[in-house]
Image (tube, rainbow, N blue to C red; front, side):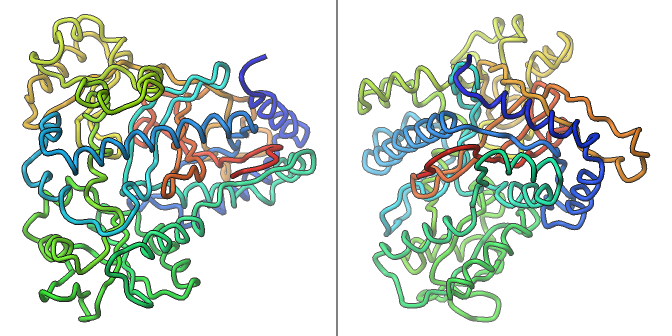
Length: 461
């Protein structure tokens, strides 16, 4: 018997599916629902599976402990960075980033929202991290819509008759957390106008709209605004219509702020003048930038952590270093490709991420030549490769509407798992479940989303 009974739940789910002859009608309906859904990223409906990830109470508690412990450690790092100029030297940041990180915050929460991606082994309970995401965290609407697509299927309904099943509610709890954080803001106003801000060509706008509706249900005017459309008159941050903005949910990541630096000065100046609550602050970049994994091991960091926190890092943070001759033996990385994965320090969306085990030796050496020692013009990190935990699932039903019932595949396939653990103001809120057949899990490597369901969990708090 392993750490959890999740596999038993999944086997039972497939057994129910087979008893309903593959539940072809339910799968067709689910596919049709998704095609008309709001689960759209960069103008495409997300790929998903009909089989949800089914987690027991032991898994819930393990995820909660892992996420909340990591959050406390990361908040300690942020605090030290803000309070101790000498500690800032352990990070390699653009001077403009240092300026942004040190802008005044004015409210209590250091890391208001985060998604910490982890490779949970559901047999042993081990949970090494893949990466951390701060204020650009997304996927909440994908989880919601994929779950909605399953609700009327025979398989889902029968499983729910056998078990107590709960989904992840990721919308109202965040709005409540946001409003609580704003209530601690030193310059708060009554009935603030709220904006969700990003560079909209990069943002998950359909998700933004749903959150705006929830803010409005709470009685607040909430707008979706491109950062470049903001204006600052010295006293008020204004939208295109000249109306004031009092609080911002920052969805733009800081490397996009640098890219559009000149066009982003209204936002930056308003934050500097303490005329708007930026939730979260640019200090969240400390979490977003992948060099945080290396920094957590540095003596300057471990000097202010407890023995328990250092042990947690050793158990959960894979060895990470800059991919350059000053930090690692590049020849060893080159010669042992299956042990390593390389990533840019400050990108998102799994951009330019390469696992050595997915490459032949010639391609791997070419990647090392291209990216080592900032050969691409910006730094890369190298990280010990973690082999993801595999579970049974169904690939996306992309052709199901064109197939006869007996042509629809029902046999399960093994996929790799990546679990995104959401935190709202430091409290575990739910999971973004992603799977894929390749060594890296992303949209570009046939990655898919699964609904996340808690099964027979007495309490979720």
